Image 1 (spheres, one colour):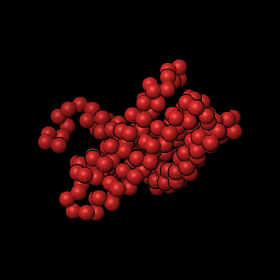
Image 2 (spheres, helix red, strand yellow):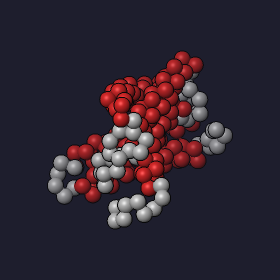
Image 3 (cartoon, helix red, strand yellow):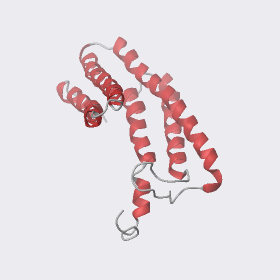
Image 4 (cartoon, helix red, strand yellow):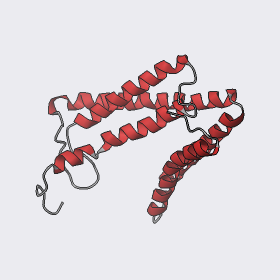
Amino acid sequence: VTEPGSLPGGRAMAWLGTGWSATLGWGLMATFVPLLFPTGGLPSPRWRPVAWLAAALLALGMLALAFTPGPISEEGPSVPNPAGMEGVGGALVLIENLAISLLLVIMVASVSSVVLRFRRSRGEERQQIKWFAFAIVLLVSSIGLGILATFVPGFGAFANALQVLGVSSVPVAVGIAILRYRLYDID
């Protein structure tokens, strides 16, 4: 920001740290963690198309975001996307919107797999899913309250703290479920 171009690879690093890489992390957490938790496998072979479609949509959305022309991010300094493809920008935005919309449907299906597992589970697996479900409820409610808090003047820091709490609750709950119920052999 203070001396543009003074460090080598600045644009490349800005490109790596943008929305396309975050989309991969969020997408994996919202689709594959519910699909695979707590056993490390799909609930049944019928869920394979859901997993393959989730992987394809994540890849498609990530690639579209990575190569969309224009500024890398709306926040911070305006840096043009070094990998942006000018000729196909409109098509990439359409692909990105379509992939993200379909990925939301896949996320609902992934969460429904947890509900299905819970109904079929007994004993320790049921307790593991309870921890996970608690974290998901905390995540969704904290994001919702965080969004509402942004509309109230002076509550921006509170909104951010709520969202950090919600996001961090998922790996903490998974860790508790693994350690508490001896799920050490999950790969």
